[in-house]
Length: 266
Image 1 (tube, rainbow, N blue to C red):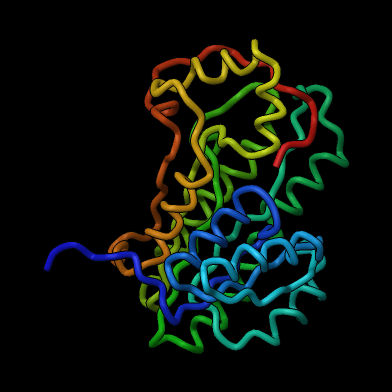
Image 2 (tube, one colour):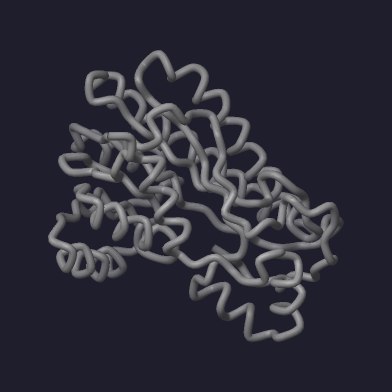
């Protein structure tokens, strides 16, 4: 038999930012693959909604209501979890601003959430994975195509996502001997509720899709399926790598300059 199947039965998967968007999609997909989900979100009502979706696919949700930027709270909440086999390090955001107008508040917030919090979650989880070395572990850090190429108006987001890519490579090398794999998924624009709002601006939508050779945005399921693959034994020899889910964006030699909306973007 050569085809390895995505089977996550008896696995425990922690997903940060689990209540909305890609975090929610990844949680449901992992549950569909058989995993028990440990959903972390700062919004309890989002976790309640997610629980209903998880029950529909006959899996279980362990709810953690917590802000990943509050280290002491995060540490305390994760102490109660004995086993974590899979981490989807998803919590993050973006605040598009022109370089010369970037506010210190914006920069600090993005670095604290996209980089520091991701590091803190990973470190706390790795300690648990090492204690359960026979079970092994898979960490999937949520990156972006902008962890591979630059874009106007997203300088701090670029900085944090390039940082996530670097962190992933370092962790992948160091933790390989501890039976822990570490990778990223790096999507282009994904059809989340936030992006759908941006795409109501037809000019922006056409410019964005014009930079994607496949001519379309990614679906949440595209990203969630890649996450499930990396979480599973089907990806047993993959670590320190990035799966680009960008429709060819980063393979092109140039792209049309985009003036991005200034709203916060997940």
